[in-house]
Length: 313
Image (cartoon, rainbow, N blue to C red; front, side):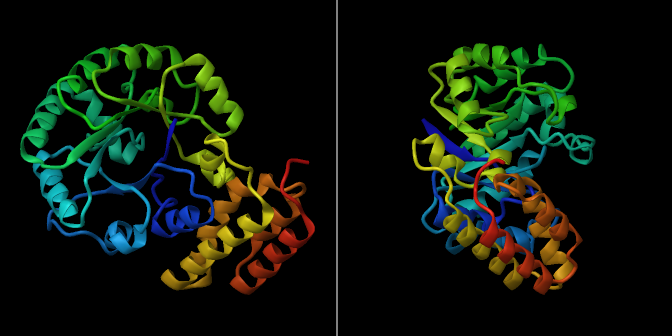
């Protein structure tokens, strides 16, 4: 079973991916959060660091592009090819209203004819492997019949299906029945994405959809950085390696960001997911949320790692 790390905007950037790869590994592909092509045709400073080969050393990294303009995709893909990337992912899954309102991400799914023309042009003009990460539609699961008809026309490297609608965001339950049907009808390799938070979730998915050979997970890794390894039959997360992961991540943010507030915002975001991994983290998490200086934060985290263990209470 192949395992992929999902791209989570603002979270799984190069600092996170590097620390995860070094401390836990466990993934066959690490997807880079989406690049938004701009009118000038230049990468932002964040995007440059995210796609820099030295910041992705050792891992199979896949950049993701968010656009509904074929010329923007083609121009960006050619630049990424110069960086050595052999595969690029098209984002047709982001449910954010600000993205969807511009007809991008999952919003592009509302215009299947334009999407068909878009794919036709980029496959004609790009000399790099192209995969697609998609939702099953905007408002109704029945939309996916037409979408799959379009995807089947092109030689996708992979079709990554998150079986929710755009209007679902991350609520409700992934539509495994539809996913199974589409998996069987797809002419391209298929990867499943959606609500794989634990090994038990993974095993339930395998029971419901036997034969699927690839899964992608994102939010589950924030709560358990060793999840990719565990899905492959490896060991559970140990406290000492989690501490190392935290320290690498924190040090990276301290190097790249300025100001305690900015650094602590990133770390508090992580602890929202990670805190429940400890036997008794409630009082520490409250202190972390209130911390306004890095020195105070460091003392709280040191005490947490010293006094608590990994495992649910």
